[in-house]
Length: 226
Image (cartoon, rainbow, N blue to C red; front, side, top):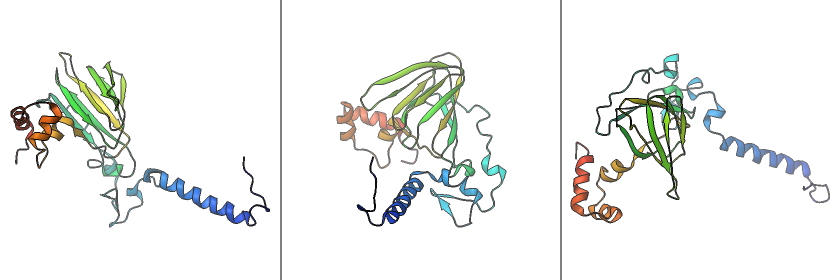
């Protein structure tokens, strides 16, 4: 323990006040906006934007509401799953609150393909059905488990993860994120559906396949306007 004395520091009050200001500044900058204000929409100006989203000047209860997660989404997709988001783009009142939700529905055999959320940790709660889920660490270790109705599983921020419905019945989960807009990067879509395209030689060497195979995979993920 260190003690400041008049002999060592003549103006110890100045030192104390300076340290207080530094600590206060660190705390304010370390805290997200959600901790500084209840919601930017409650302290808004018409011209104010935070995190790239407007803080509405005349917010209403509807800005903090959505019913999009109430019903199952259509799972007639290539992967047999669909994600319905309830983030700041759908619920303006979430701006600066640092949270969001989504609902994921899976057809029998449906997959939510390997992907990452660069800005958030995800926690899923199983509404119904049974899923094989897992994530891979940066040391390439797989953490996998079968989860069913009422179970909870967490996917750490930024790590590649997936969910697979191996049952012959539909399944659904609610996902919670510690971000108002967690972002999603699907591994296959990101690499093989990028625009402009990632060159064939890069993908061929990375996956140890030929350029013919690369082009076949790209054809499956190519944007419609390419």
